[in-house]
Amino acid sequence: MVGPSAGSLRAVLGDEIRASTFVLVPSRAEGFGLVGLEAISAGVPVLVRHRSGLAELLRRHAADLARYYVVKVEDDEAVNTNVWQEALRIVLDDPKAAFDRAKDLREILGTKVSREKAVREMVEILYAEPTTEGRLAARSGTW
Image (tube, rainbow, N blue to C red; front, side, top):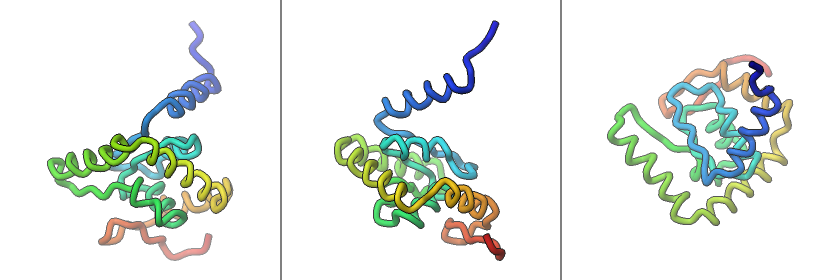
């Protein structure tokens, strides 16, 4: 039996993302969050944990909009449930505004981030150390 090709799986995933109301990336250990980046490129609202490479990229290149997409959570699951719930409520209470912001984010990142630059920054972020604020601080070195 032959399964679906990688290309057809990518097409299905792309279709699923474009049909979504939002994409949630609550991972505790996510180097970058490519599915979140795919959602952004599709113009779909995305919510990502504040300790991820994608969150850092959003803070660097779309600081004004990052507050809608980057969710600051702690180690307390009871508190986190409420934090994620509030972030989701903002998207679901006004989906048109959420999609308008997602379109703005896609346009901003499209002008500021090339594929080469994104890869370079992803490598920088992956080799970064967490700081006390939960943001990533690059290790010394030149990229």
